[in-house]
Image (cartoon, rainbow over all chains, first blue to last red; front, side):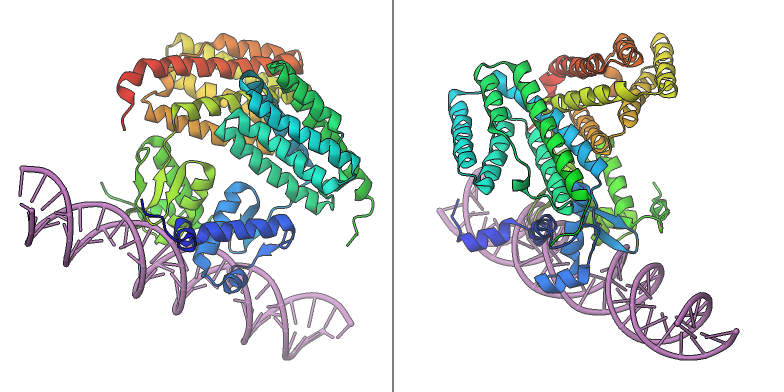
Amino acid sequence: MNEQPEALSVLRSQSLASAVQEEIERRILSGAIAAGARVNENGLATELGVSRGPIREACRGLVEMGLLFTVVNRGFFVREVTAKDAIDVYDVRASLMRLAGETLADRITDAQLSVLETLVAEMDQAESDCDFDAFYALNREFHDRIVDFAENDRLRALCDGLVKELHLYRRRSLLQGGGLAVSNTEHRDILDTLRSRDPAAAGTALERHIQAGKARFLTASAETSDQGEAS
Amino acid sequence: MNEQPEALSVLRSQSLASAVQEEIERRILSGAIAAGARVNENGLATELGVSRGPIREACRGLVEMGLLFTVVNRGFFVREVTAKDAIDVYDVRASLMRLAGETLADRITDAQLSVLETLVAEMDQAESDCDFDAFYALNREFHDRIVDFAENDRLRALCDGLVKELHLYRRRSLLQGGGLAVSNTEHRDILDTLRSRDPAAAGTALERHIQAGKARFLTASAETSDQGEAS
DNA sequence: CTGACTAAATTTGTTGACAGTTTACAATTC
DNA sequence: GAATTGTAAACTGTCAACAAATTTAGTCAG
């Protein structure tokens, strides 16, 4: 197996459609393409320097992913995630994180435990430093690791999709990551249940954690819904 | 065999790509396109009487759906679902059906209850008639209805995808629907918990039901696995 | 000024074509 | 005879172009 120059291998290991899909996804999640807005195929094609074929393929993938929807003869639109949708996603995610906890408690290794312990310690530090961005990133990695360690590929893929969908809603309702205060004690509880290898306890701890996140999200959402105008 | 491209021209209310996607999905799930096989874009295009554009869009959607995967410069291939994948999917589905049960027990109406009761009665009849095909169809509708009645759009979409994925594996391992004997008593138990509006009981009943299905699937899979593992 | 009707300009849905890559196969060499 | 090389066919990835549909702008009657 010859090693090829990195630039070439990147260009040849990925089709244009995949690259375009990632780019459109990035723009949607960053808010560059607003929720409800139409994806202009011509505009994107000229801007990205490709033809409309790959653009349409990417959009078709994003439709199946739940970030876009399509109207015949009118094009692709960024999905508008309603509050009901967000609640539904939170419920599903809570259920799946419960599964992750139940699965992981049975098989977690000491090395994996120490990884999670390190993350919780770092979150403690970030909390006392009032560094909310760092806390948010660590929090997300904590959850990602738990799902990763559960070693269920389908679970992993579904959780990723749900997180993206929630991100889309948070942007729409002008709630940023730092806005939702999360106490690190819940993480510590989860860690305890995993350390004692108790599947039922770990499952309920994680499910409750996500449900608590949903509750925080709902109250925060209610606070900002009075005056939707910012920026 | 005379090909009628008009089969797809029921559109004008649907894009060609959507119709093609459904057709390819049907062929994959029916085994007309074997697992691991490449999707021949030219062949399908001429056979369905369309160009390759919609074919590729459909395939890109099916990739995101988990039924296909793509290799650069070689095309789209039907995913090969391993036994590990099937187990993962069963676990996720059990977790989601638990959520469906918990949600539904809180809000189920008498009309919905009678729908489920009718289905269980019909399954009893099919069971005593040894009509396994009818039982299989009724069984599937029973589960579909429970998910529908839970009124969580994301949950329903995910469950649909998981069922399709399992169907793909069952085909690969030569297990047909009738091959997996399911006792109707489990359905009756589920119905009882729903009738008494007990979320926790309904959740565990449904989760156990799917886990029991996984166990039946594993034993049936072990029986046929002697010939099943082709490279 | 308003509202409807019409024409132009965009934009989508789809197709056919072209270049680069992979695969199949025959010819060549050892 | 087996391995290898070279060539042709098939196929994928991408693009440009065309037709149908939609949106927009403009005109005109009331």
